[in-house]
Image (tube, rainbow, N blue to C red; front, side, top):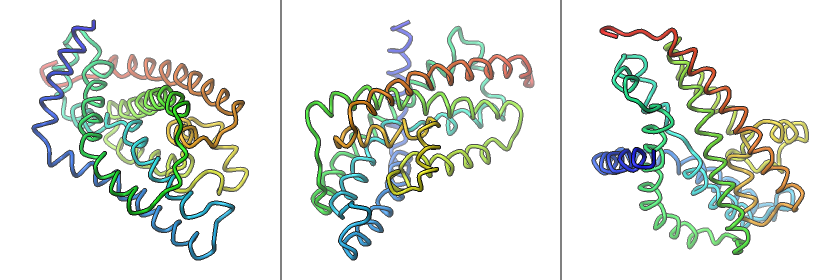
Length: 264
């Protein structure tokens, strides 16, 4: 099985280098919103001194930490798979003796991230020099953040893959995906730090898996979480991976049963 993943890696890595312009467009897409929010909140904090105790340097640290973590935990499954489902070209992958999503699409996501981070790191350094964030990283926070980021990516990958499978039934899958993206941005800390949300919204965010993919790794890396909350969120990540994996497998089996294409 390892050889299969290695072969997919070589193919996908070469393919990513063939679409460098596409890479830059995706990178710009991922950076625009957080940098906009960063500019807005730092301006407000500078004008008022702080917002709920958060200074401009705190906001800069939060959003500049969020930027790379958002790239590392994001999923591009729907961009690669939805159209293949709708036009029937996924049939070629279905006859292969491996799961098309848990092998090829998974490796595509990883290759895309590695290449994105290669380009992003120099940009991030420039942004740090411009905004002067109050970064509070430590060796321990880095060690804890690594598994949190990996598990966060697993959650987003399984969730988006499950949503993408809806394309087997409807051409409106993009509308469903965009609704989920908008909803998640409110509850994962991308739009605003969760501490600034109303209490009921913070409670909802804690129950749902969205904050586990972004806010949790960000605050963990910034050393802003107590030990008991860290343990709780790690447990929730494992719980949601189990739930989403079971849901993904169920939807996949149902989708394959009813799928048909010309020549299939």
